[in-house]
Length: 307
Image (cartoon, rainbow, N blue to C red; front, side, top):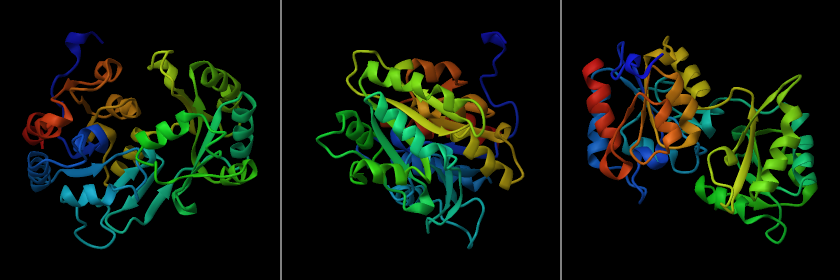
């Protein structure tokens, strides 16, 4: 498809809007603007379902953002009143935070993946499944690479990450939605290569490496390991199916590389103004930044006229 053939407006009725949180729905100071709240209310007022779709776990402020956006359940068990969390690995009910479903790594993989990460000198980070407690674990501070805390902070988890002995880390990996290998560029590249066999065979995992979009001279890099095909588009597709809809019925708005599959696979993907070029390249439109109410602009331009 040539660039001229790419639709610049939705080609069908919009039924769902998926909103990333950090760098998208909220400003840099963590607040949600009145303009965004008003735009979300107007979308819901014409029958569009609005769902947060975030890398955060639910307990890290997702409920509060959803409440500010006015996403209250109309009744107990309302299928529309939920959030997609953990980059598509789980869904929770609003506002109670009850887990609807979760996708975890095959149990036999977790400890073996941690062992491979340790073997190349990278620092493992293990994120528990929501039903297991939803904590994050890594090595003690004097052993862990600074990248572990760097990414915990970036993912709003700096208060949740717990240092544990090596064997405890392996036990935590028995039920996990995500394992990370943290370190510098060269060490994480070695981890990416060493973990490649887990992406093949029975119960394959999916790998992503920050070195594909961050320069080699950046001090903090990570390899992420997740169940195969589990990303925000996966979680959003499950949400849509519960409503009798598909990804083609969705507009999605995001700003970071963990939004890439979602923006690429929905009916109409919108990148925030401050997004990286690689994300803008897979999107159908670019709006203002999170500081300048880009979500409100996206809803005004690409949702309300097509609802």
